[in-house]
Image 1 (cartoon, rainbow, N blue to C red):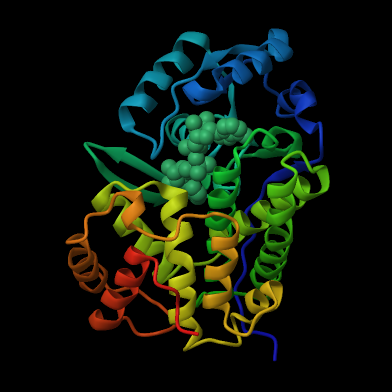
Image 2 (cartoon, rainbow, N blue to C red):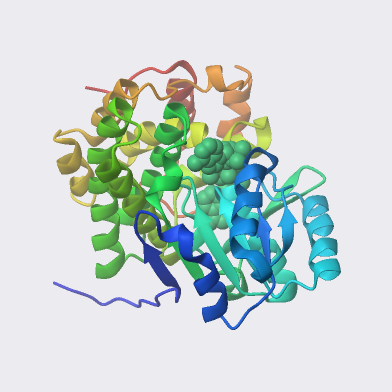
Length: 354
Ligand code: NAD
C-alpha cells in the first residue's frame, strides 16, 4: 500500500549533457547575474581559469583554494575575494570540496550558486553543509546552501582517476542504499535511490575498462545526481554516522571510508530489512547484498580495509564506543558487540558472512 508519506522536493535547475559546461555564460545570465566568481581546488585551478576566460566579462575572478571539509579559514579568505571582486554569483567547478565552499559563501551572502560537479559526491543537490573549525566538523541543513543550478557535464569526469571514480561512486551509492531503508523514505526517494544504484552498478565496470566511455560516464553522473538527491531528501542511518565518526576521529579520507564501510553496514542491516535492500541485491544480481557489494567493490579495486586508510587498530574499540554513545535511528538496533564486530571486519577487510 502506498503512503502515508510527506515529501518536499529540493528545488534546483538541473542541466545534464555532454558538453553542457560550454554554456555557463547563458546560465549566469539566466540568473540575472553578471559577475561570477569561479571556485575550484588548487588541483583544478587551470580548469577554473579556463572557465573564467570562457565567461569573459561575466567572470569576476577565480578563487582556487577550496579544501576538503570546508575549513572556515578558507571560506573567510574566499569571502574577502567575494567582497573585493563584487561577485554576484559563484560557479563551483569540482567535487564536494569545491561545492562546499560555494555553499559556505551562499550561507553567508545568499549569492546564487551554479555548480559543475566533476566527481560523484552529490553535494550539489543537497541543502547540507559540513564546515570545519579547529579540526571540529559541524553539519547544518539550510535551504540557502542548496545550489540554484547544477550543470552535469559527463565529459568533465573523464579525467577522474580510476581509484577516485570507484570510491566516489561507492560514496554516492551509500546515499541511495541508506535512502532505501530511511525512516522518512517516500515513493519518490525510493525510485530515485533504486535507479541511482542501478546506473552506478552498471557504469563502473565499463568505466574501468574505458575511462572515456561516454555512455558509462553519463550513466555514472546520472546515478550520482539521483543518489545526491536522496541524500538531500531523506535521513541517513548507521552507515553515514559511522563514516562521519571514523572520518572525524581518525582523519580518514572521505570517499574511501564510505567504500570500505558500506558492504558491512549493508550486511548488518540486511538482516533486518532484506526487502528494502532488494533493489541493491537485484542491481548486483545477488541474494546477499552485503557480500555482493563487498565482492563488487573488490572487483573494482576499491580499498577494503580501514587499516590501509590509516586507522590505528586500537581505534576499533574507540569507534565502537562512539557509535553506541551517540544513538541514532537505524533499521536494526545498534548493540556494541555487533558494531564492534562490524568495525573489526571493516578494519581487516573480512568479507561479510556468506
Ligand atoms: P574533492 O572535491 O575533495 O576532490 C578530491 C580531489 O580530486 C581534489 O583535488 C579535486 O580537485 C580533484 N578532482 C575532482 N574532480 C576531478 C576530476 N574530474 N579529475 C581530476 N581530479 C578531480 O572530493 P569529493 O569526494 O568530491 O568531495 C568530498 C567532500 O565533499 C567532503 O568534504 C565531503 O564531506 C563533502 N560532501 C558533502 C556532501 C553534502 O551534501 N554536504 C555530500 C557529499 C560529500
